[in-house]
Image (cartoon, rainbow, N blue to C red; front, side, top):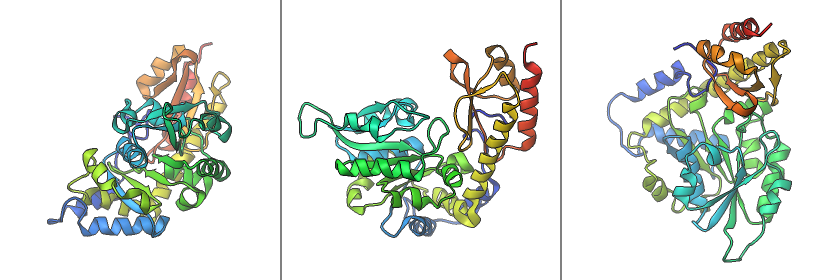
Length: 342
């Protein structure tokens, strides 16, 4: 299948990750996380985020978000999130079904929620007729490809903790955010007041598997049971853990994310040269959002598949990946120009 711009999920597995999976396949190992590879991977996360970090490996991003929120909440709680958040729009109601919680979507600006938007939901505490706000969930990178600054994250976590709430970060594209911010992971997560992190790697060269990181062990007394009930406890866990070891080795995560971000910036530069294309979001990471003449979209999709973002205004989303090549960008831009009417 030709490389396209539909999703960084569509890319393959980085060869270094594949090699790590193959190496982990030698012989037998204790299941359910009792193996040496998983032990090493947990230690590696602790090196990155601090010794207080509790690490739970899961199958996928939805599982990571559900485990995070299930650990933090009761069914009478509410989770405040962006109206564009993955937990709100793209997880088929899984967070609400499996936690029992109400999601409270906040209108966003450039994909981000702000303290001003959050605070109107911070009421009804101790009132038994009202779902009790408990968690603020933010996505880093956001669903619109933008990145929260360190100051923006700190403002949200400060507000949350002032009201006794916890903060969850959906980090499906955390590596892309780290590269964009030029900061270590810990600086804009645990050090910025985030309580729980869904740490993703699948969109950045891994095959499968995510990690849930809790920065306060007091929160995780029941998490292992919740993970099991959520069907997210992998018996052959070493094959997830091995990927994360390779992901951190020689900064593979950074190399991959730097490349995918750079490819998005190149795509941005090329489409800016086409007057009929209107960019709709800042290109902070590896996503480009644009309004494209609707009559050329089917022809573009035949050659380089991508998704519509908002059909009503002919807005598309183009995602770049660790394996996107400059030639892909140049040829795609040339195709757009060739299809322009007149």
